[in-house]
Each structure stands twice: as C-alpha cells, then as structure tokens.
Length: 109
Length: 115
Image (cartoon, rainbow over all chains, first blue to last red; front, side, top):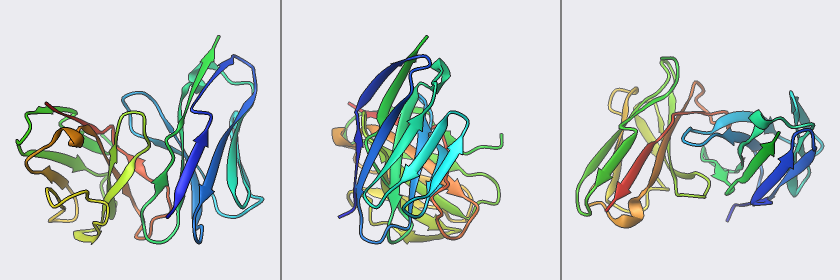
C-alpha cells in the first residue's frame, strides 16, 4: 500500500529562519512526487513535480529535492506570507494521488 | 471566474439526509477528480472522470456515495443517507490532460457537516 508520511506536523519559524520539511514515502513504482501548498479554507495549490532521485526544482524561496525514499522542501529566508500547510503527494499506478497529512508552517515576523 | 468552482461552500445536513455537491471545472479540462479531506488530514482520493467516463471510483467509501459527470463538464457528488463520519471538506480538481501528471487545479471545496 502506498504511504506518505510528513514531518514535522507543525513548524514555527522566525522570518528569515531557513528550514526543511520532510516527506517520506513508500510506493511501488513511483511515477511522480508532488508538493502542494494549502491556505486555510482554500484548496491545495500546485507547487512542484519531481520524477526521479536527484531531481531538484526551485520557486522563489522554495526548493524541492527527491531521493529514493524521501523528498525535502527547503524554505530559505521565509516570510510571513509563506505560512500555510504544505502537502506532499505521490502517484504510483493509476490516476490518483496519495497525500500525506501535511506540515503546518507558521512564519512570524 | 477562471478557476474550479464548487457549490455550496458550506452544507449542514441532518444525519440521514441526502446531499449533492457541485463542481464546475475549468473550461476545457478533460480530467476531473473528487477528494475528501478530513480535518487535519491530507486529501483522500474518491473518484476520477475522463470527460464523461468515470474511470476510477475505487476511493468511494460506500455505496452511499455516487458521482456523475454526464456531459463531460459539470460534476455532482451525491451522498445518500449521510452519516456523521461523512463530515469533511470535499475537494474537486481538474486537469487539462488525459493522463494525470499530478498538476491539478483544485477548487476551494465544499465543507459538509453532518449533525
């Protein structure tokens, strides 16, 4: 059974304090790993797709990396507007995504 | 608007009532998904449509859940005889592609509370 575990469950950072979120996965035949951002009361918003170990993607203060067992979302010098829940998902067979429970990030100024 | 539109945004139902949740995907998007998100959890897959064809309904939790997309555009998720455990946010997502690349456009969701 495909599984995704995210850690930590919650993370509080000061503005400018860089950190990383972790996504560990167990899947047979990874077709893609995805990061989404979700603001309170909103639907998830797509951030990145990673397909193979060693791949990296960047967008503004965010950088996603992938190994054979986990992915990291690195946040460099975060700002309060980066506060959100970050969701990781994997796609194996079929068209469905399997999501983790998310990491709630709070950045204080 | 240009995004995925869901209605109602909030629905309160008494246990045993039937509910219908509507999704208007982005125009021209062929793929449509329904996910269920419980409080504090990630979304869980319910069902997938490619145009009007329901290709995967493996995530529907019981036969009380039914989804349709008769003309390949608007979709409706129906829940019969609602139970308290059905309380959740129901998210609709669409994609312009036939195959799921994982880049989905989500609506804001319909929050269902069953009393």
